[in-house]
Length: 313
Image (cartoon, rainbow, N blue to C red; front, side, top):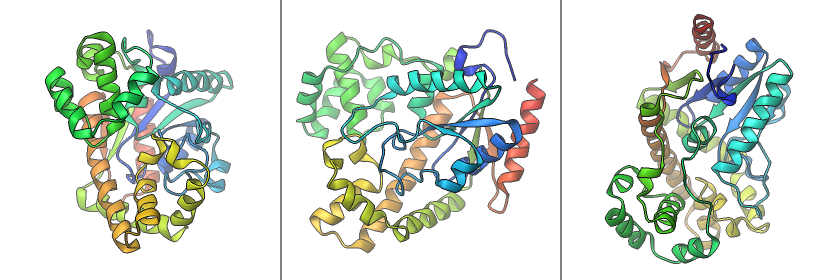
């Protein structure tokens, strides 16, 4: 799998991407067993300790099958961003390769993949005072400013994600340049040489899997998990509080929204997020997409990827 001229993270590794509930984790585990690999979780919420059920964090049985990295590395009282992730992920990949193993990057956070394999451009570091001021403004006001200052970013950004909108405006105000002018694009740059494989499913199949996963999360105790986290500073962590499931359950506990309505809302938000993930990866990444049928096994998908990697050499 080695290719000349790659950056360190791209050398002898494999990336598994796709929307939530598409089956990435099981495929990554099977690949780890086949290739002698270790898994690097590329998930912006699994980094936080305590966010377990709602992030579908691997449990003891999964952890016993293959080593996992970049899970439970930040507390709720800590800030964590893509730049930090890139540094830690690159270091983890180097250590995995030093052991003679294969780093398997697996997850659905596109920005974190981009940070590792392409960098984050020339964006300045966070400015706490400016960010705090932006956080006080309504999202609608921020979006209006972004549309006027940088129409290109406004057209592409996830407008339901205040964190992303605030970061774009922060960079624009600090540099006086459009945010879009300071970011690289995987597809246009062509420098991401690591093999990327994406799992895609028919909408009806993916939605059914999402609904089943959400039901299972609530059965496993998501409400109680959120209740405990609220007592341990969850609300003070603006990033973690945006995690799908945690935000809605917190509203259920604080505002009294009926549980059945909350469960349905989590399903809706998760389906919307899955759609945004697919849009992001198709726009930004050089991915070999593998259509997964409803009855197809993870073993079959893992075998397809293994065969593709052998052809790469």
